[in-house]
Amino acid sequence: MPELPEVETTRRGIAPQIEAQRLVCVQVRQPLLRWPVSPEILALKDQVVGAVARRGKYLLLHLESGGSLLLHLGMSGTLRLLPADHPPSRHDHLDLIFANGTCLRFNDPRRFGACLWAADWRTHPLLRSLGPEPLEPEFSDTYLFERSRTKRVPVKQFIMNSQVVVGVGNIYANESLFLAGIHPGTLAGKLSRIRYARLSEAIRTVLQQAITQGGTTLKDFVNSDGKPGYFSQELQVYGRAGQPCKRCNQPLKETRQGQRTTVYCPKCQR
DNA sequence: CTTACCGCCTGTCGGC
DNA sequence: TGCCGACAGGCGGTAA
Image (tube, rainbow, N blue to C red; front, side, top):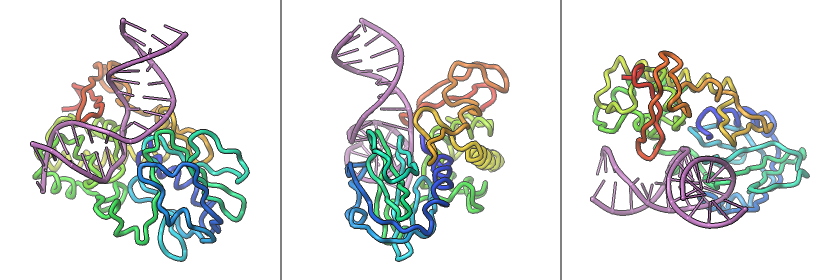
């Protein structure tokens, strides 16, 4: 599922191929995604792409003449680089066609993804109130500790809240809490500063390692070359309920928090 | 303000 | 074999 490492893997794959390229046109086969594809995007043509950036789980294609395309992969979305004449297949909802014959193709079976226009991405409603990037210095143990003081939600839900920190979805929340040795049900406001230091470090470590491995492929995710990511092999708890903890051999437990599956080690995580 | 829950969407899987 | 419900889940929206 595309969380921050999968989106970053995609960004690194597409950036060298489309930065400074001329976008010739946008072909939409299915405009009904999470939100309808913005009319401004349907009308785009002859625009040069500037930087390809990422904010949380959003990809930003900045155009040199101003404004940005926002792409979100939702749950099942992928972006692939293909020759423009490559025949489309099921769930290939839109193509960005470039002057050099390259096509950036968005495929998304579940259609939870999005392709939107932002005149100014900084003030766009979907981006405006996002929390800090977990791999940037603003995301610190002090920041997490202070933001958590008034919160009575379990710490797992706290770190999955994109207004607190972006990019941490269910897989990496489970993995980070295991690495930090923190029980996912602990109330966010009750966790000590020391434990937030361990947690923020664990989040950075897990995300960075996952990026290095090219993301996590459970079923669907592929990078812009159509290749899977290899972090699945490193998962300590996600998808391993009932199996022995890799640290202490105790069987891992599964619960549900906020309609999400949580897996943890009852011995290593307190 | 906070927290809890719904629903969007398709593919897959287990149970009967 | 086929049908049906549950589940996967990011995240905005709404209700309490």
